[in-house]
Amino acid sequence: MSKEINVKRIGVFTSGGDAPGMNAAIRAVVRTGSFHDLHIYGIECGYEGMINGQIRRLDTKDVSNIIHRGGTILRTARSKEFHTKEGRSSAYEHLQAHDIDGLVAIGGNGTFTGANIFSKEYDIPIIGVPGTIDNDLFGTDYTIGFDTAVNTAIEAVDRIRDTADSHSRLFFVEVMGRDAGYIALTAGIGSGSGKIFIPEIHTSMDSLFSSLKKAIKRKKLFSLMIVAEGNKSGGAQQLADQVNAEFEDYEPRVTIIGHLQRGGSPTAMDRVLASRLGFQAVEGLLVGKKNAMVGIVNNKVKFTPFKDAITKEKAMDKDLLRMAEILAL
Ligand code: F6P
Image: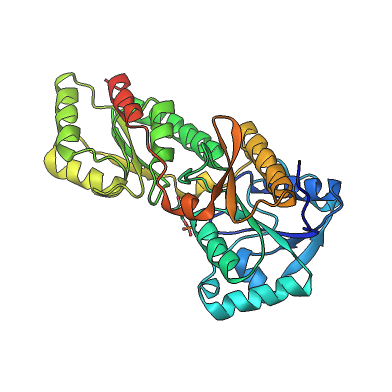
């Protein structure tokens, strides 16, 4: 650490969809802050709690026994009021009342969009920690919660595989990812599934139909298809409906894994990632970093300005989809 600056009281909060590993990040923020003799304040329910003054001191004991727990001990919310100037002004007043002079925001795109606006309106340094199962943030290879969500999805698909195989059935399994296909792509490859439908790259119904026809010829009706919820040509149910209308041989079944993917104990990878990022967020504030998201790129810590983290698109590796297709033949 080089240049010291005057941050003495840091507020930490989680916002948007919860993600397994957020607690490990909170723990890292509190423990790193204590190490540097800072006062750490937990803000409950994200921006909503900031607006309502739900702020309390956290010390090292408050974060004991949470590294393995899913969810977030600080709770979370998606705040409409923070979109308004009045909401943000009330949030700032509550921070001032506690003399909070730095913030660590743990969340995703919406969280950092709010942080970007807030940091421009009020002179308070903010560091973002990427916490979302979607892994859709530019400036970090992985977001906290992604690995756990993928493992949960793969475990679910493994179970579906047993029954799909036994009945020689076609299944469409829908995973989360409103705008991003990272969970679908990774879970699809990791579960050895057939076609993978993601928002970023279009997979045509023609290509699906043609592989289903080939499967009929080979008398192999058992198949698993993975669909991201944000797939542009429809979710799992819509795709299954189209197959139903086209084929007599198939009676596809649909499973939507949904919020199961958001819960559960974080994997080792998520715990370590969250610990590294929470630690770096505090040390970053201490050396004058601000209004940026801390991430890990090629195993190196990297600070990316909020405006880039929220507007730049993280490139999807198209070769992986092609590889998945080949491996599923
Ligand atoms: O952003 C994370 C995420 O889990 C998305 O994958 C999903 O579309 C969304 O949150 C669901 O949000 P909610 O819990 O508000 O229904």
